Length: 447
Image: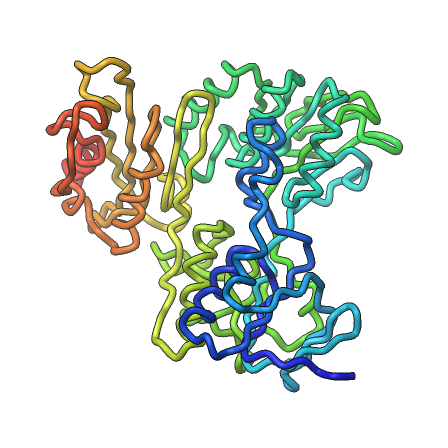
């Protein structure tokens, strides 16, 4: 059997695989790059709820093969079945073998389903792939009721999609309010009210206990003593309880793996020579305190891929950790958070001070001006910024990015209090009423 050769082999064709491939080929066009991707196509995961709701076409979220092939790289739509790290050899499921010079592991993550009794019943779905999208769209066409387990960003977006389709929708979470990793209780209460106002039946402090049913799920039993009945075979459950790294291929190898992923250093190198890893499959740390933390977001994966590629090209690059900036929509609200919440900062051992800022999305004299609220969290001993939260009608993600940049550079409240910014009647608050600055100034008074 002929053995193919690749200077760079990438296992995985998602955000990391695409980004690393493009950087390697564009910077070193003489090098051969092969990407392994078992799916016919990868999708823009965070847009799946909008396909299910019918707002956009399924084809619009498919990432084109040309993102890889137009660079001159080889794309193989197949899985690896075995990796021989010492021999620099990867065996594919059809028996082909590829000898690599350098390897990037970019296998990503798969949805996590809590292993409670009944978790294997029919009509319990997760959402990650194009196939999942098709399955849920088909199920939604005949269902009268759906239960969404998990009120993170994807869970809320799935629940809103189901509600928009006219299905009785229940959203449950073990936390007291939705988006609990992004928001403290002040904003969490506002989000809860918005969810309920949309018609979704919300239950917080309701951990999943078990699923009931014979063949298909007919009941969701919660730890708060309540249960939700379903019409078996027609109604369904969507589990949106996070993800776990996809690492089965490497479990029996010498690759250093912990619960949350592959152990890598700041250059995205693993413990095995010539093997790098990046994205949802790796274990990494927060940029805020340097301690391990979950950060399985595409917006974290892409910078990791760039760092891995730069190092493979012989350039010095390090990944400093993530701050987990994220945003979503809840009804008419745009909401976003980054870094640590006040409650999580305390769990990590920080004493905190917080500041709030409230203004309007436009000059108050302009039509359509609506309320914008900001919360900043800082370390009480030094004033160093630890996190931020924003709720408003628009432009929330962009302002969260400002706070994320401040977190990456370990800025203090005093830096944000002196923030230089723009103002324009249609687009921003009054010149003297930047809510980030206002929140920083309020927190500074408490130091």
